[in-house]
Length: 138
Image (cartoon, rainbow, N blue to C red):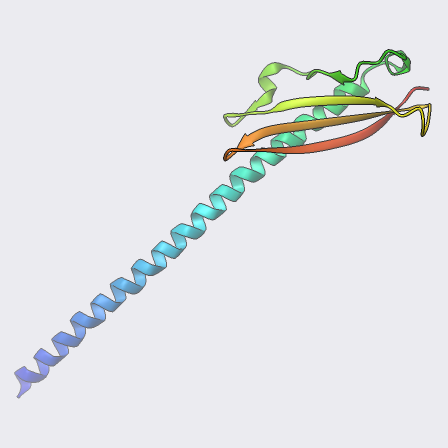
């Protein structure tokens, strides 16, 4: 009689072990999925931060231009990246900078509108950030 009880208990122990392994397995798969999503979000945040820093650096380099540069009626419509070329590659991502200049004489003859757009490729699509400011001609 004692041996039949032990056999029943051994069967329950085996089922308990299988259920425990299944629960642990499902939990690990869920944790791995969350880890992958957080890693991808972190990488995206790094790219957006790098693009914002590049755009800010372009703005700072534009601030160093003289007032005479901004007064020039023949201002170009766009400007190239003013920094070092190696600064446009961050964590194996190539960034592209487009700086456009708009004379807004119809609104205010003393201001020049400057837009810096930094773009990069991410999963087959183009992502970008854009900073806008106004420089005074006076």
